[in-house]
Image (cartoon, rainbow, N blue to C red; front, side):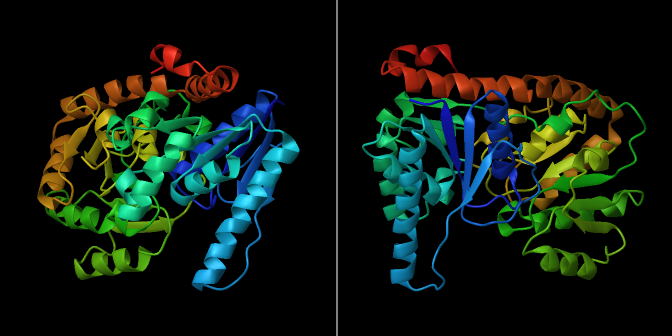
Length: 375
């Protein structure tokens, strides 16, 4: 088996999973692997790849009919299978939903080991009884499975859990820097694509409560997406147009948020929220919803690395934000402990865990006897 690895994800436009898979591919490329990145769309995205990575875009027929969709799905499976055969890849690493399913089917009967990774709450990635049942069955045929939380792993049956591994998301390299010690005047911030799952409208509602007590504070939401217009309109209706900033996507997030007073995650669902870990690395105190499937809770330890609030509760969110703004002793404690925790997420450490996990399974059929060595 050649030292070749293939990564497969639908798109690289924006998002935590996209960032992780690009950084992981970059790491394997630097480690001397012949590395491929397979996507369904040709865009370059926000995350730069090493020059040595070979990018492949799977063509598909236009149209939205059932026959076309089935044909496209079968075509993608066939094309990925052909690539695995031609490259004699030792591993195929897939991220998210249907891509995991197609990756498993593409690798059936081949020597290539398929590694699937669920990046959000499994019940959301696999919506409906049919998809959930299919995922639970097919994941048993994968070589390995990577989850971000115990809650996500426990969604799947015993044979999947037995060969699985829980790995935190690594920090992106640009977040590996000394703790910022200057004045914090950046206000309240968040980072994430503007979709309904991130529930930025909840954050604007909570900020409307905070704004009455703290006229010195502004809210800045970094990220673009389908809900930006709705969030902007909500801020207008609440009379907060001049205090809610929506700059869209940017490649300079570390420098933009490093002096923030509070970082807030308002999501309804998350896997392992990269944005929270990145706020830790900047030493920004965090308020996060306690959202399924438990990834946020694994990062945010109450009054140690941050504050947790119930999903969908604007009053509790506002209360937690104000608590940090008004208690400098608590804010300083959260900054220090969160930054210390972020150092365990150094990309070299996490990427090496991925590499060891993949190599162990590719080289041995006795992974189940050794899995206790790697958590």
